[in-house]
Image (tube, rainbow, N blue to C red; front, side):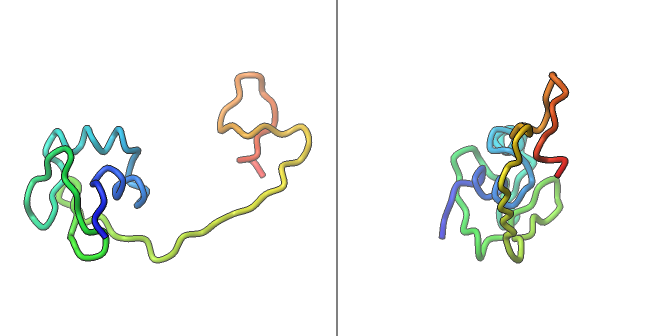
Length: 89
């Protein structure tokens, strides 16, 4: 199924969509050996996508975690107030 390159790179854990746009604009992303342009789409299953010449592999399987957040913990990756964060669990 065809999707925008930014979305594919983001889903594969390479970078954010905004950073992917920067990589595409700079010419670092290729699809089947052809330099990609902003707005291009690719087939996530059949096209070969490379970033800086390195092939971006499709993940085998996604892992989902569920957590009941304990009282006193915050759901942020950094907290300037020093409170405990769920990422430390």
